[in-house]
Length: 140
Image (cartoon, rainbow, N blue to C red):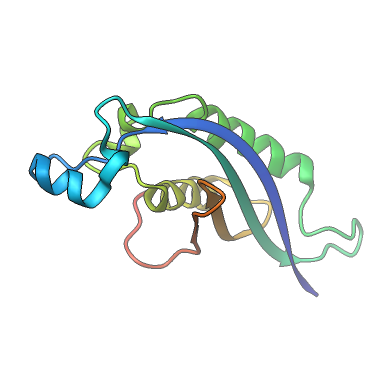
């Protein structure tokens, strides 16, 4: 029996949406107030969904302790309380929440082996949320 498990986490980070390949006017048109030279912050909600066979012995897709430990160590400690623009993952990439989803998915896909990663969802504001479920050209 295959099942899905979704777990929610929270972290805060800042970013500036800016593309050096575009003019100041283009950046302002595309990113508006999110192009503020001093950046801005969000209290992100992260949902991680994993899937797999339910272990008949434990009744679980995976142990929550394993998932929580991995997410805290590899994702929340990495991205939380950071200016995303300064992180290696976003050098040459605009740190949009779409790109943050891709990065988080890649970290999970590469290192979490207790269940299959199905998707990640990041809520940036009450009005904006983004999901990534693999496919396409992602960087690990």
